[in-house]
Length: 206
Image (cartoon, rainbow, N blue to C red; front, side):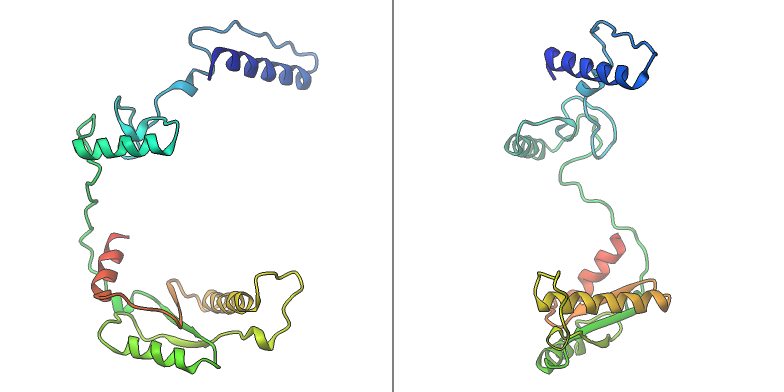
């Protein structure tokens, strides 16, 4: 912020204070070298160490995303932090917590339209092998928008309306039943390779 912008900003604030303060007098101090807006020019806090180190790319202002990306690449190449605390590619340690993946979720629900048994069969095939670590899901018969009148104010199509209503009912039932951890699946899911190991790694880091 330039001196002219700072002065204009101050004048606006003082004018506003005069308009709401009535008989109170608001004096306008001269712009000093350290004014009330000095905090706008202070160095930002690093996202990692929450300090204000000089030369930290995470605690700096950039005029554009390209400038920021360039600073990030340079920091990654140097592999150092001004305070010697972090490196750009340092991985956070995974907490050694024993998790029973099979019972992690209180309820697992698979959403399927009754008129799409082909999708249900494909899902059951994927979940029947050893690549599914959780409990077997309950089948929820999805709300079929073709059988319901869609509100006039709904503009996102019948499929989206049925999907929204389905998930809403699932969530309402879970809340009423006191379910703490709920997993909702769609019938077009595709499991990645080594899914159980990836899930266990993810849950241990959450």
